[in-house]
Image 1 (cartoon, each protein chain N blue to C red):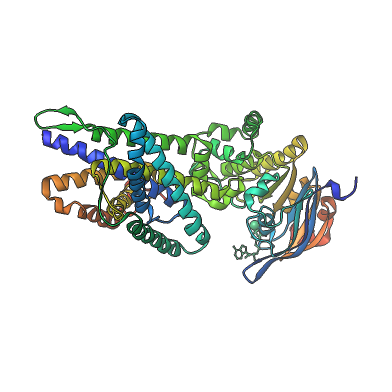
Image 2 (image 1 turned 90 degrees about the vertical axis):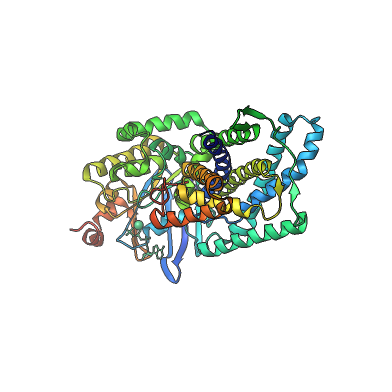
Length: 242
Length: 301
Ligand SMILES: Nc1ncnc2c1ncn2[C@@H]1O[C@H](COP(=O)(O)OP(=O)(O)OP(=O)(O)O)[C@@H](O)[C@H]1O
Ligand SMILES: [Mg+2]
C-alpha cells in the first residue's frame, strides 16, 4: 500500500487567522490510520486552533484538510461529523442542561445503528462506572473529572474513524489522568480508532502516541516517532522540564 | 363565591391562550437568545388562515364542528409554521452572527411588515370569526356558566403543552433542541444541523401560536390585522414573568397574566385590562428580572 492510502488525515499548508493574528502559519501533518498521533506545544501554540479547523469550527484561510479521499476543508461542523470525525473540545463543553445519558446520546446523534449504540453506551459505562452511577444527573452538576470522562465518552459514542482530543488531562488529578490515558490506548487498540491527541502534558502524550509533532507559535518545529521526540534535546528542555 | 369561580375559569382559559403564545417566545429565545417580536403577528395570521379556511372545511364536513375544528386547527398550524420558518430563513438567518440588537430591530420590522401587509391584504376592518367551537353551556347554575368554549380552550392548551413537553424532553430532536440552546458550536460537534433545529423550533413555536389564535378568535371573534399586538405583548410579559427560556415558566406566566387580567377587569375596571400586564412587567424587571422559574442563563431551552 502506498503512503497515501494509509493516511487517515492529511493537513496541507494550513493557515488559520483570528482577525489579523495568524494562529497557524501554513502547517502540514498527517495522521496514519490506526495510530495515536500527538500534537504537543506550549500555551497559545495553536493546538486547539488546529483541532477547530479540522472539525470545521473555524474557517481555514488557506491550505487543505482531507480525510481519506474526501476534502473536508471549510465544511460545516455537522457535515464533518458525518465523515467520521469526532472532536472532544477544550474545556469539556458538556451540555450542562442535559443528563449524562442525554449527553452520551447526543454523541451518537448521527448514528442509525441503535443496537450498536446501546452496546457502545455499555462500553462507556464499563470504562467509566462513575458515569453509570450518575446516568440521570444533569451534566452541569458533575465534578470536573466526571465531566472529563463524559467528554471522552461522548466523543467515543460517535464511533468515529478519527477522534480529536483536546487536552483530556487538563485540570484533573493524576489518577484520573492515568485512567483516561489508559482508555485512550484501549479504544485505539481494541476499536482501531485513529486518534489525534493535543496535549501540554508531553510526557504522558509521548508515552502512548506512535507519532508526534511539536507546535510552536503556529509552526511545526519538529516531528517524528514519539520515542525519538521524547529523546530530542530541545523537547526534553522545553516540554519535559528536564 | 360563584362569581369568583366564574372569573377563575375565564382567567385560566385566557391564561392558557397566553401560555401557548408565550411558549413560542420562550423557545425561540432559548435557541437564538433574542425576542421574536413578530411572534404576535404570526398569531394574527393564524386567525386569518382560520377565518378563510374554516367556512370551506365546515361545509365540506357537512357542518359537524367536532370534525371540522380539528382539521382547521391542523391547517392553521401548518400555515403558521410555514410562515415562521420562512421568516427565520429570510429575515433572521442572514443576521445570525450579527449583534442581537440588529436581529431585534429586524424582528420589529417583520412585525410591522405583517401588520401593515395584513391591512393591505385583509383590509383594516374587523371581521367576524366563524364559530368553530359549538357553543353550549356545560354547567349552568344560577351564577356559574361554564361554556364549551372555556373547556375546549383549556383542554386544547393542555393537550398541546403535554405534546410539546413530550417532544422537547423525550425525543431525539427535542434533546438536540436543548443541546443547541446550550451552545450552538458544541451541538454542531455532535453532528447536529443547527439550521434544521432552529427551523424545527420555529415550527413548534408558530404552530402553538396558530392554535392560540383559533382559540382566542373563538372567544373574541372580532379579528383584524393588528389583533396580535396586545396578546403578543402580554404573552411576552408572561414568558419574562415565568423566566424567559423556561418552558414551564412560560405556561405558568401565561396563567398568571390571564387570571390577573380577568380579575382586574372583573373586579376593578376593564379599562385596566391591557395595562396590568405592563405593570407586572415593570414589577418583575424591578424585583426578579430572571423571572419566577428563571435559573442561570445556560440551563434553558
Ligand atoms: N477566538 C479567538 N480570537 C482571537 N485569538 C484567538 C482566539 N482563539 C485563539 N486565539 C489565539 O490564537 C493562538 C492559538 O490559540 P490556541 O487556543 O489554538 O492555543 P493552544 O495551543 O490550544 O493553547 P492552550 O494550550 O493554552 O490551550 C493564541 O495566540 C490565541 O491567543
Ligand atoms: Mg488549547
